[in-house]
Image 1 (spheres, rainbow, N blue to C red):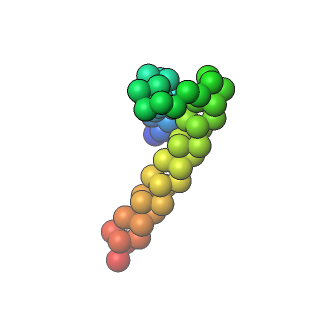
Image 2: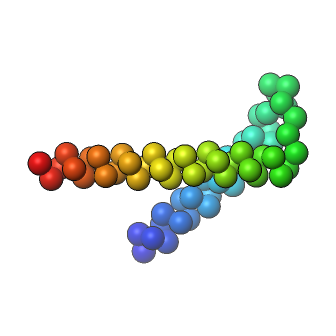
Length: 65
C-alpha cells in the first residue's frame, strides 16, 4: 500500500501543479500552451520525487547512526 500511496501522491501532485500553472502563469504574463504546462509540471514532479527520495535517504542514514 505504500507504493500505491506514493503513486497517488505523485499523480495528484502533478495534476494540482498543472492546474495551478494554468491559472497562475497568465497572472504573471506567462502564456504557455497546455503541452508546455504538462511538460513543466513533469519537470517539477521529477525534481520533487528526487528531492523526496534524497531527503528520505539522508534522514534514514542519520537515524541509523
